[in-house]
Length: 208
Image 1: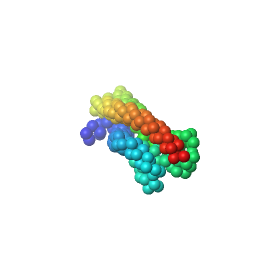
Image 2 (image 1 turned 90 degrees about the vertical axis):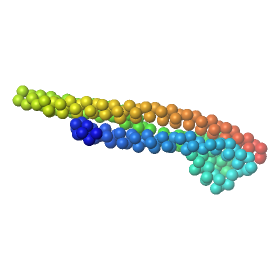
Image 3 (image 1 turned 180 degrees about the vertical axis):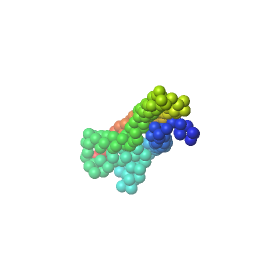
Image 4 (image 1 turned 30 degrees about the vertical axis):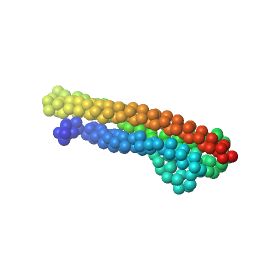
C-alpha cells in the first residue's frame, strides 16, 4: 500500500483524507439511523397509554424528549397542551411540525458532506490524472527522454483516477442508501405525529 501511495504522488493525499472522512461519516450515520435510535420500539403506544391516565409530569416529558428523534416530536405536543390547555388543533400541529423539522434535520446530519465527497473525489482523481500527464509531457523532450519519468507520470495518472473512483462510488451508494432511510423515518414520524395529535385533541375534548 505504501508503495502505491508513493507511486501515486502528492495528489493521492487529498483522496486519502476524503476516504477517511467518508468512512467516519458512513459509520456515524449507520449507527445514528438505526430504528431504535430514531423511533424506539412502542414509543407511540406507550406515550398514548401514559396520557390516558392524565397529563404526564414534567419529568416524564423530559424523559420523552431524550427518546430518539421521535421523542421530541411527541413531547412538543404535550408541552403545547401543558402551556395552553385550550390550544387549537392548528397550534398543536404547528408545534409538532416544528419539532418534526428539527428532528428531520438531525437525521440528515452529515449527509450533505458525504454527497460532497462523492462529487469531489472523481474531480480530485482527475486532478491527479492531469498532474500525471503534465509529468509525462514534461519528461518527454528531445533532450530528456527517460522511461522512468514517463512511467512515474503514468502511475500518478492511473492511481489517482482509480483511487478517486474507489472513494466516490461507495460514498455515493451510501449517500443514496442513507437518503432512503431518512425518507422512510421521516414518513413514519409524520404518521405517528398525526396519530398522536388526534389522540391529544380527543383527550382534551373528553376532559373539557
